[in-house]
Image 1: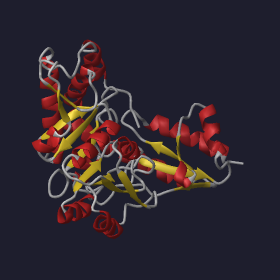
Image 2 (image 1 turned 60 degrees about the vertical axis):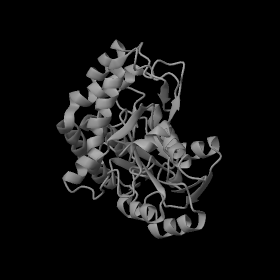
Image 3 (image 1 turned 45 degrees about the vertical axis):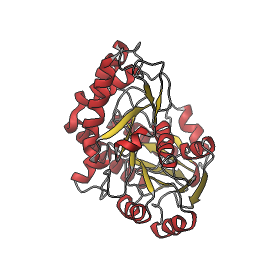
Image 4 (image 1 turned 90 degrees about the horizontal axis):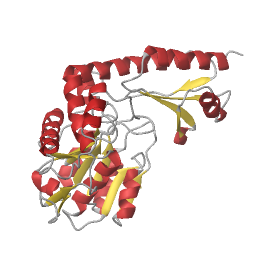
Length: 345
């Protein structure tokens, strides 16, 4: 789920590779870049408050930290399809994680989720807008209503889907309103995925400044007097690179990327469906999951030996193709050619 970074981002990253992102007094360009990045990207989600993080894992950990610092509960409720960083966060902060079994091809059942909220009175609900394995999007608006009704913090992990959904929604390709407020307390969006920024780069948006302050800490030995996020030293080059990548691609560029990726997903899905012995699963975002009835699990090693580096979808005993901004029709046709040859006899 990473992509080849935009050339402008690479230049900016290298130019500011020496910069500590947690020292905005010495390096004011970091503060300026982060503030502009949060403001401009945040406008997609009606978000005014947020910060740069090193990735979706740090963003998810910080969201849970903000929630438990705002309440006495240390219970997290989520679908079983959430990212493994939620498990990490609960281990680190000694939280009880209540997972609702959810089929990997389906969103979480909102009725069961509300039952668990009533039973466990959690500090936070975590859902996903684009699961790692299959790209499924949980019902954000419906669960936001539940969170608001019960006074529970809701975090939406949109690491993969965050820079796709707002644009796909404009074209009627998905019906998800991914915005802060009305029950949604925070949203995480990875810039080094569909944002095409150099690694590491993610953003975490909060509903208000108070929640943001929960993930900032006094650092009296630093000129700024505080540090936000988990890292003591943050890669300033990555912060600046993310902003200049965002500006270089622009809203129209990100919209074109999202539409192109969905077109590739549709093409791949349709062509895989025509190959005898290949079973392909429905998709929501441009992640196509399929399995070979002929080769089973061995297809993974066969493809890797041929330079086709697909990842596994273990809960379905299948493989997944995560379409990213750098992919072209040539990449997809190369995979299809190999799969057709393997299943021709």
